Image 1 (tube, rainbow, N blue to C red):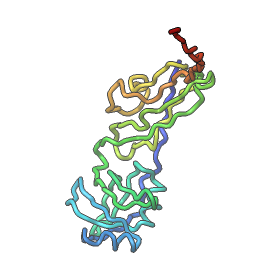
Image 2 (spheres, rainbow, N blue to C red):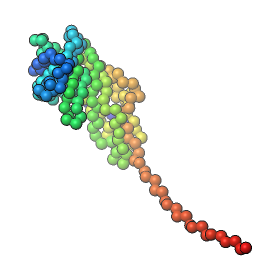
Image 3 (cartoon, rainbow, N blue to C red):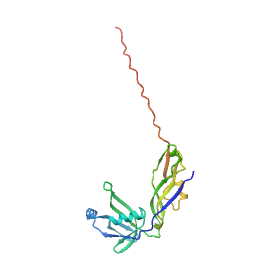
Image 4 (cartoon, one colour):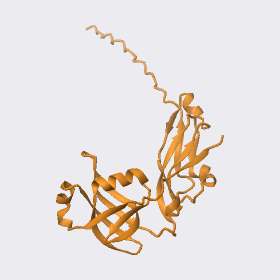
Length: 212
């Protein structure tokens, strides 16, 4: 069987600059209530510092460039290319409460995590098998301008008992994958068979009598 991979390219680097402001770490709650996200920026030619970004502007930018997209931050009047390195969310409110921005050199490669999307219906699933995705991301080394939004893997050729690992797609992907060859991406297992257990009824014991 053949596995086909396809990269979904991210959109162009965001030209809109997201303005930032310096912040006092003690005012995080106040900033959030005012519509800002407390953040930190560090990396290439930037002194590590605490900042805040407009939640509205940042959310709009993130939606346009994607999780791995390159954004521009206005830091003290200087436009800086960054990627979203890490973030924290309030699960109950579905709200981002903190962001880490990594300033980058557009000419240098960096390691990024890219989502893996499964496409197609595998032969094994059509036969009743169960498709599982133990790992949903790959780490690739790539220049910022070439960061893919995701990697599509066509699994229509996978049968019951098949396992797809990094070794199966490494040579078919345009960028170096840093994960080990045995890093499992997709498996198709046999359907679970419930064992029927028959309740065996025990015959009551007949009491024995002894003659005196």
